[in-house]
Length: 403
Image 1 (cartoon, rainbow, N blue to C red):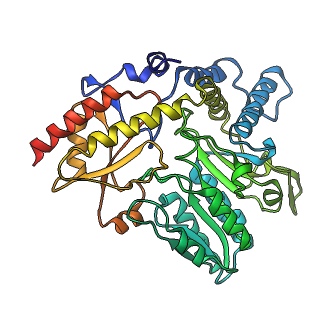
Image 2: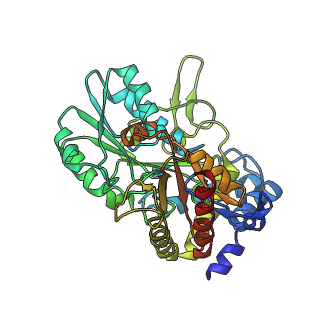
Image 3: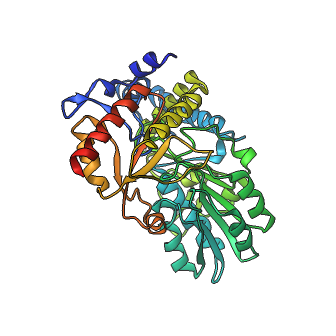
């Protein structure tokens, strides 16, 4: 697809923001949705919106087939060898909570170590804090370096027989840094620890192969990769998932129920109680179909955009850009001396430009950086260089006005 044709696939780009042409630079928070995804979810409700897994009539069978085909698409998309390793949740946050609770409560004990990093999203910190309170396990943090990468020497020094799980972001949602997950997994496994990977920021931007990474768990969300809100994914190695107790219980995940006890069905349905998020999962399948139509062209497009934006931003006096790793996604976070990030974000909003200001659900990292907030811009395949030019022009105007 050409850039022009790609943009035509995203109807929201026809909207205005504050009566100005919309420039959307907040894809790290949530991506825009192509028309094929919107129509696929709508088709479910219009044509075969029946209850899946429970119905023998034609509409129910079609809904079930579409749902399970989406599971197969997800498995293939991230390199999993079996669709049984794919669990659908309502968000990546729930996926991480599932692992922390179902695996952690069974396997962690007093003085065991959970190893995190200071660049984690709150969703990959808080669930581990809760399970540590329940089990007596201890949380330790790998620190980031000034250029936005992890201190891998410290990581190796922290590994010992007490470390039971390492839970780490694949790509930082502040720095944009792509962490060397394959190396982290290898070192952790040498010490007997499992590895949970938060793939929310990596899956929409780089090829994922969970078998090559050899991670034990991998989580991501649908809404950051052209899919609907309300659907997340958890990949887990089958032998580990089979030995985990259910995270939640109810209909659809049972094998047998009597008045005295219950038994569970096999994976993946053991972890999908209640009525599934059918429309959202089917919409996610359409999002993966869309990725397949653009192939890997989006990777080169985003690399070009990030390089161009960094060059332009570095020409601005008084700017501090956080993180300069060579391996990164299309995220740039920065501050301007003596101007609050929220003021700049509001100024840009009235120029039609959507950016993010705040702590980005990364308060520990903000503390490490010695700031309370920053501006974050993030791109995807529907963005263009001329939008960056307009953004730089309006950013300079905001600096002049607010200084």
